[in-house]
Length: 179
Image 1 (cartoon, rainbow, N blue to C red):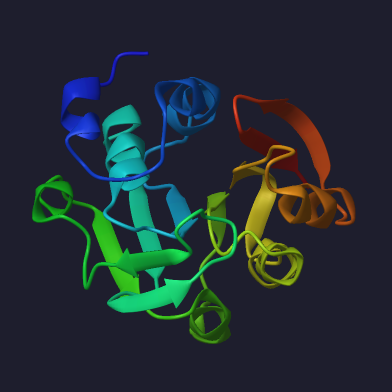
Image 2 (image 1 turned 45 degrees about the horizontal axis):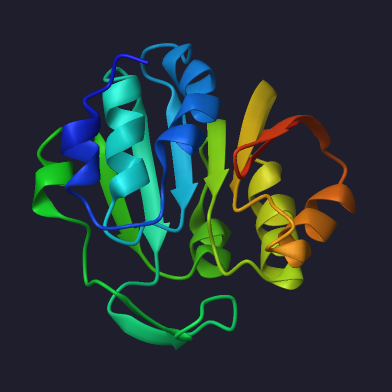
């Protein structure tokens, strides 16, 4: 996997090398000009990975930004989402950050997506709603990557298995889905 892990690991977030290994072949093979939509940015660690894995794609990353949310899936229950992703991530170009709730942003969306990455609230409803709302913009033969696709997040697993998508790969906390 020819990406600079040193650069990626300087960015705060929960995104491991093992997760990158699962996603790399799907992102690396995207054609120039492809659109990757990422739901859940935090500081942009996964965003930078996507950019380094394929510098020829356009990345639209969405997060609510600058709120403190109570998330029962984390031990401290208190996650501070930054106002914007790290400037070092944005410097790599072709990364567009949208500040807002993914369920509101999708109402104004009209592009076709080549790869969708979901790392949102980890609840059943949120995961299912993102799959349904954003899935209709996927191009034929495109993929969805779901972060935290593990038994530690049973609502994510249940939402995916209750969807119309086929799980084609599941390892290292990443689920890869196909239309």
